[in-house]
Length: 388
Image (cartoon, rainbow, N blue to C red; front, side):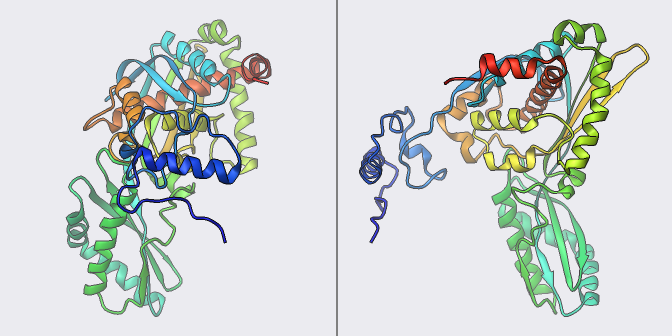
């Protein structure tokens, strides 16, 4: 019979219990734990973020900047904390940030904001499901009022409807303030669905999620309709500046985009750019975001153009950037420090963080695209990315 991991039902978030679990794991695995127990945070601070707290996984953290952002919420120079184990990443993003700065900065706009829960209601037949959809439209105000009884910051914006067989899928779209909001909208939608069940006859049953919210999974629906923050970062760059900084011409970059677009299409990729997941993941770890949301947040649409003067326009649209400046891991001590570095701690800062991440991603796209064409990709990894 296997031995269970030690727990204390009265006070499980203490240094004594963390040490007891480290001793247990060391005994079970015969591995001396020299580093898991070296941390500065109070174990009590991790309540609500983890169970069986045993120690910490230390991820190296570097800084990128100054990154010049021209946003509606983030304006000026920022030094961006990025936690990663991939050599060359910080150097590459710094190179992109330098080019953006010399071009006057990245213009970043949050163009949409929505978090979903998508229940499905099952009926006897398709006609009943259709009629229910009409009733939902007529009773939206009351459904919204019921949902919003559970939250002070969440607001039900609209409900999209999708019909299939004898089912009606409802995609509840909320704004969620400074929180990412998945749990918030789940609770709100549950209350709304229970009210619907009590007030509309003929529903056989419902499921709180029919999977059309695509939580922590990418979907084309999210690319079209937004999940989290929809962010567009863009810049126009003179060709001579690109040549000077990146050792590649604007024309070569532009032509390469048409080739890579075809490759991304043939591969069925959710991203027509180079590697937005790199920058997003590194900032997510540093600032206490739910890293599993990278599955959705890494989707991107890259667009490029070349004007008559040879200036190169580049933009990246991130349709599903799921972030928070309140709740979850953002309240942990080291993550709080990183948010404060960016000026993104406290209320009303989530769009500012979205703009900074958008500019960071654009810097990374510029740098990697240029490195691939200029032949620096492999040599830079050889120089900076090997530790053994």
